[in-house]
Image (cartoon, rainbow, N blue to C red; front, side, top):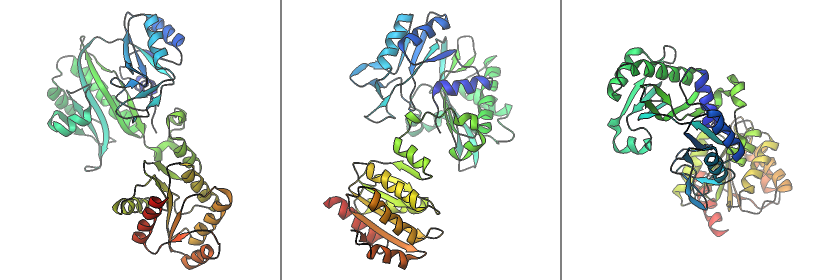
Length: 396
């Protein structure tokens, strides 16, 4: 689960981490009032969307307007907010369609001396969370990692013991942080690592992390993603979810207990099991096709869930053919066969359907389809299914 920057900074503030004072605003008037409340001579207006690269991003139809802009008056704050709100912001992470800006953050300016990078993720190689730091703050860290990985410094830490003081000192030495700033760095780094563990985060990223001219370290940005599987432990965090930032089909699938990820191809895939879903997409691509989605109905899906899965698949106008690939274990092939018949009754099934069934009650399931009178292309084996659905999509 993702949250907005201003929500992330609230969490950092509660954890004792220094962040600039700021206020979220949903109109130009609110942005102007926020500038007044800050009481300074300089502020920054930042578009709030679930995507990075906002500073270099541009508004559709107004390419001179960036997603982040410094302002010096309440009138400027209003002007920038009005230029952003309700508009599509295109960044390196949104794709060409962009994301609609529905609120902005008006934040106090900061007396910056240096910009650093800080991120925390789980390193699967060592099975520990790892703190990453770099002097290349404010840059595209993916490019830094690809072209000059030696500029990123790593410190794995134990989730129970947390980041240790000697690790902070090592990082400070590599980052060129000295004097009283080391104490500020220790408080911030240890606080962020504790927050990462306590809130079951999957990513915490601060880019830039700034060192002020007074030597204090301040989180000037806050990107926080949470592990969805741990959200049952954090009811208060679930309230921060902004459904308007998420793909409607993925939200709809989640409400039905389905795992769905929208992709860019034209072949809808309905499978049971994440591993089988990946194999199915690989085979479709191997034979020249392009999956339009990842949809896993799980091992115990009921007829109504499978019917809803078909509704979601067929609502995608790019879908030219559907592949149903089921290996019946806990789920019975007869359940899938009956769900397909029900979908034909309830859903406008206007594209070719290829079905491959194996496992529990497979012969009974095949008989249900064979005797139904509906147009189904049956397949024997995954390769046969992939070839047939690619051909069907190409002919559609």
